[in-house]
Image (cartoon, rainbow, N blue to C red; front, top):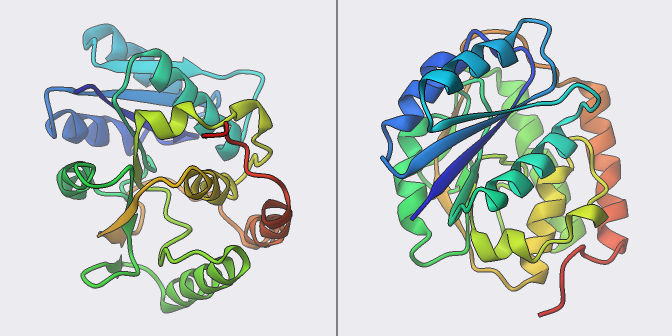
Length: 238
């Protein structure tokens, strides 16, 4: 069972070395793939050096592209090409702690997509302002209503996919280049009748660096839900 963890990055040099080291201890079958958007802080240089020392670490250095959405797509496609049986996506800032990954991987025995969820019993957030938590809850309510989803945490980017789910998504038809990529892939998985399960996690405030998330990105992501609602899911027919 080959597990590939995809990590889209931009200026995460303060977080990445310790995160990768911790991830590699989760399973000897696990490899890490970093997709870096030419970070000015030299994140990609650091990963290139790490990859030269450890064959379980891989780098995609993007010079002409930028964006969470396209980086996520590139990571999924590369993980499939590398022969992954399970593909993990997560943030590289320690907000998604690897200590929850074992339970998420175990849940794939009975699920095709496993979501690290803040909004199911046992889940939550720590170290964050109460306003951010409220925004998370309201955004998820909004998204659930628009798409008719039973999933509680529709905005979580901490997820595990079985290979077949990602193979049946038509990546050239994915339109989201920002955070809405999370919902576009989730809606695609539902269209494939994938079994989706939520596993509780604690979402933590980043350990180092600065988030690029802002109100403009939030608004664009919320508006994008209406496009996703009315466009056909980008999946191959079953």
